[in-house]
Amino acid sequence: MNVSRLMRGVSAVLVALGLMVGAVSTASAEGFAISTLSARGASFGGGAAAGMVGRADDASAVAYNPAGLTQVKGTQVMAGLAAVALNLDLDTDATWCSNSHQVWPIPHAYLSHQLNDDFWFGVGMFTRWGLGHSYPNNWAARAIEKGKGTPIGGGLQYTNALKSITLLTSTINPTIAYKLNDVWSVAAGVSYTWGYLSLNNQLDLGMGGTSMHLDNADVRIHSENGRSFGYNLAVHAKFNEQWSAGLTYRSHERMKFNGSARVRGGKLSLGGNIPGAAGLAAMGGIGNSRGKATIVLPDVITLGVAYKPTERLSFEADVAYTVWSRWRALNVDLFGSNPLTGNKLGGIHQQKCWRDTWALSLSAEYWMYDWLALRAGFLYETSPLNGSYYNDYLIPTNGRLQYSAGFGLKYQQWTLDFAYVYMQEREVDLMAGGEAGTLNGKFGNGYDHTFALTLGYKF
Image (cartoon, rainbow, N blue to C red; front, side, top):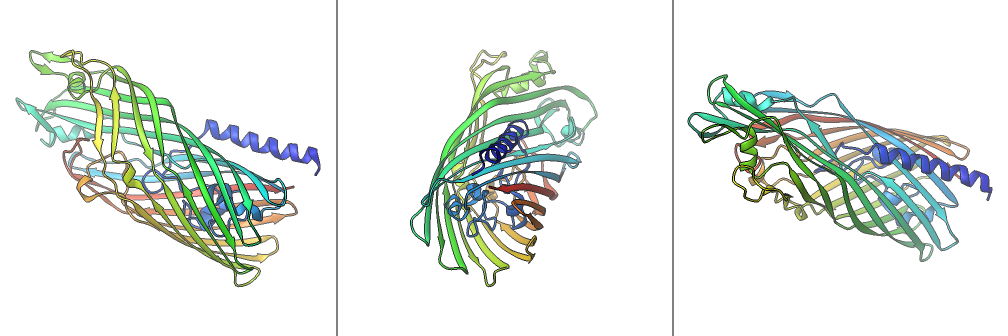
């Protein structure tokens, strides 16, 4: 092998990995899972069930089915970027608002190397989990004017409204694949995920049924050093030139964050026994302090079967099972004391009780010419939400449909893949009250436009 060519390829991957550290994604698929792990996978449907579990024939198999790396001869590097533009409208008793015109980058990079006739090594850096949406300042204050706020006595009402939520993560996943024989291959790997979490709420206080707003405060909880570890196992079988299949398992991870909470604006007391907005935050267990939080990232099991009736045409059907039921609550524990009473602050404790979900994808790839492949895919995901817990602004999810198309170009040792994905999200009805203090309303008109590009080189 030409050593200088290998070093150029490794350098390209390292540059891509460096890009990923600085620009992780907040665009989500179902729940807070990320759909786009490569342009080719995105064109097949995206997500865990991405039409690459049975195929698994390029370096991005590290993310989809590492056992398929035994089909990749020599050394291959791939790196790319996806851009997601999302729209989501929130219509409540207070007002209507939208979080459109947000664009998030999702980078990815992979390296596959054949060690000998039996063993392959692969490493990938990609984004599996992320979430991000925001709304205008004090958007829920109008609920007080309409008498729809939470009453606290004496005609006073308050609202507790989400301003923004951001979950940024990135995962590095080295793996080893072993070829048992001409049919079967297996793989095992470990993963390290790190990330950032920020939750920003706004409290407004006023006289219910009037335009008299007495006070407001901004409450922010954030952490920059979340981390977790996991592992993955995979099997791939190439039965003949027509049929292949794969099965993968990625373990759940407990991502632990250490950070702080702060309250800006507002007053602890408006006089007498009337608490200001900052006082309401303290009574709710939130104040300036250090804290910790844990988010459970679910297990994912994926099965894929690929069929290749001709040399140029292939189809695949994938099914993915995500164990969202592991995420039973959002718990943010704070270590400070209440400035009003001196009691220990509580933090945020919201029950989730999500259900496990299924995703199904169907995809096709046709090599029209030796240098041009056309691709298309469809994905359907069920909702993780339990009908009793539709009172949460944080994750406006209720199942979705995803339509995708793309193409691949090949020139000598180079490949270039492009994908476009349209994701349509079902409406979520919100119930007033609950631990998050939601208003009656719904999330609607939810959709994403995703564009992805991946460049690859084989040595």
